[in-house]
Length: 190
Image 1 (cartoon, rainbow, N blue to C red):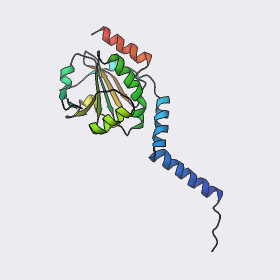
Image 2 (cartoon, one colour; image 1 turned 90 degrees about the horizontal axis):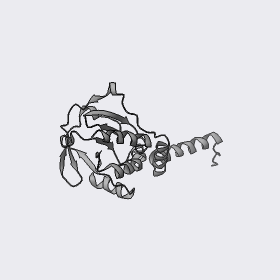
Image 3 (spheres, helix red, strand yellow; image 1 turned 90 degrees about the vertical axis):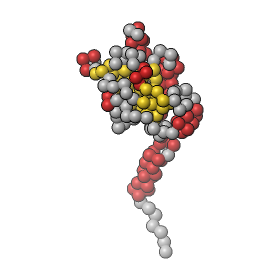
Image 4 (tube, rainbow, N blue to C red; image 1 turned 135 degrees about the horizontal axis):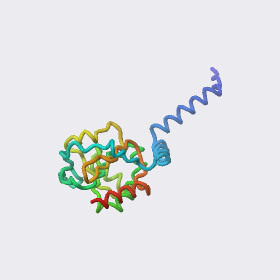
């Protein structure tokens, strides 16, 4: 029995399917998605003052990686930066270096809450591997409705007057000059 040589179009289709499989289900694909997300990340936009809303509640309980429970209510009157992320999320991974740089410079001035559903062990392993120093939390109760999103990354900035001034779904360049200027302006009012 003799085998027929496959047609060129059949070989191209097989190669395309293999390429898609690598792109979707391999570390190579994750790497490419992270790089593309970084290229397409820009400074986040502030919500127009006329459209800003006050945070509906500060009744939100979180657990830190040391097992301590904290309440968002403890930070009322401070600038709060909340980022929802996961280790398996390429856009989250893409923005982590800019978040780490921002956190390194503003950690003593602003409250940072990096909230994940990954186990602390998995999240900490990821942070060590990527050389990131970010405080991570698990949500113990539901976040305020103003910060609920079905998509990650999702990032919210609440000013000291309880206004949600940024609600960004998707990756951003959080270490941009424009965003740092916005934070510096907010800190002048504190």
